[in-house]
Length: 116
Length: 112
Image (cartoon, rainbow over all chains, first blue to last red; front, side, top):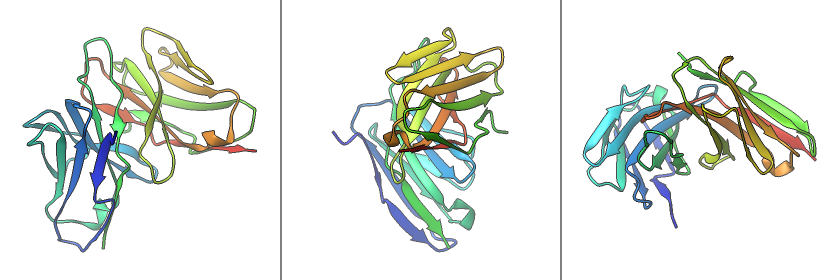
């Protein structure tokens, strides 16, 4: 069972270049998330989606765009990469959050992006 | 502004002893809390959670305590094992809610 898969695992970009990170989950989860992890900052939410065709901004959305055309996929795009976007990016998914309980996040292995 | 804080970046503990990892939060509306464990080059994995209607939750060697009045939670690992060496993140969520807010993490080293 693959769980949450991220591609690519590593990427080096030059300032101004664009790229897309792909996240795929096979758990039939409704919710999907993109986080970035930076030293001393923990995990910060970039964008999330509560279902196919819907997306919303998280804590640090600037410079990123997302799309959720299929339930199992969540794409994170950088239109014009900047050195400040050098980070490790994690995709996560979860079941629908209920009114009384919270379903935990399942994370991918991460994608390390370096912007020169 | 960081709503979930882990003020200890690192912690070292002898094997067999207790590890106590702390987490503070500022938003009194949070009512569900989770702990995640992360090994290098891997994604975080869920460890244990607690609802705000409880003050303690146990799962094997792991116990999470919640003090709502102090807006503080802690993770106890007893006994600590070398395989527990990892970065631990606490996270908080509203119920119902769509977002999880993470702390900055504490790197635990268990010394054999």
